[in-house]
Length: 471
Image 1: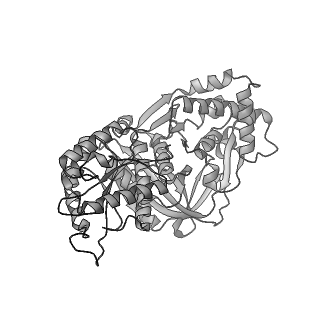
Image 2: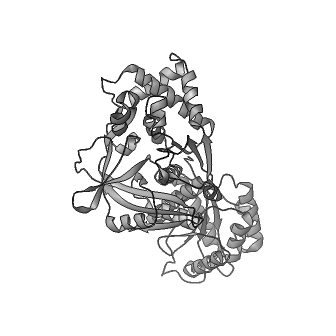
Image 3: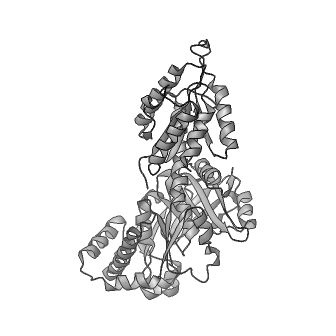
């Protein structure tokens, strides 16, 4: 996941308006973005007559610059310190060939300085630029206010939001998602269309579960990498004293193979056949390594839920925090805006927000034997705001659908084992009605913090998915 984003910059100006306003806006914009921690790609001031962009010739120069740096540019910021020139802006964007998000910002006039030397008219110019973007089919993100100064909190907040949109849209467009093993037969809800995913730039990389098991089997118990992974697991969470060391070693060997495969294939997220072939044929759970890589922002989903892995990755991109996969699992008494979300034990530590235990799976442990089920991460999720998101391939209608919304984790008790998240979601019953009648799966992804708006904008405006935003 890219830590530092790079924005292509278009600063517009228009004849009849003072170009010095645009040049000063350019200076302010670059200085502020540098302070906020972003890199920029922008024409040098000597490249155009005004030092900024006006007309088609300037736009073509800007487009070439953007093409030359296309691999680095995560989004484009269009700034209008005066009226701006719509032809220059739309030429730069159209001829660059970029498909990244675009933010359009315009500056305030000072009501005491509206003489010919100082008036900006960017309030009007922004409408002209946006009209052209609309008619050229160039999707863009609008600012929270129609105009405001570059040196304002509104600008800082909008750029932070835009950066989140860029991370989600850009990350998903080139995502590589692993699929370890076949979908378990009882989980038909985990079916997914790789072709629809590929149409959005998401590549699925499969591997047979036998390759993972036999690779783990070939590892020497005393190998340095195996011992290092075993120590990582022991340090990652509290392991009850009754767990045999041989079971921890077995988990370490499997975790090492999965981790190496994920890195060798340059995956952004992955899914695992974890119910119940791996327990029966290898003898431990896969939850530990899914939790550990999730903590490093490479999520792992259960039951070969490829769409779930994509959903987790989208939230990790938006938040820059570990995401988890959960079941919409239980009602909470008669409080119809509360529910309990749970999973066997793949939650990252940062998602739980507190101490974790690594022990046996509960449901499968009782069914196939606890000696085959070590590796589940357990803990009750601490209170705080959260965002939930799920994407799904609708093969019947040939499109990708999703839903997103926000709620909170609460400290309310719930005496059930495993990974437990007691949730409050405003208007939960209409949400459940939408999920039930629209064919969504029982899995959902969640992350700490409020990021629904950015995820919604990224997947609808820039990926073209149908997304229901529950508010």
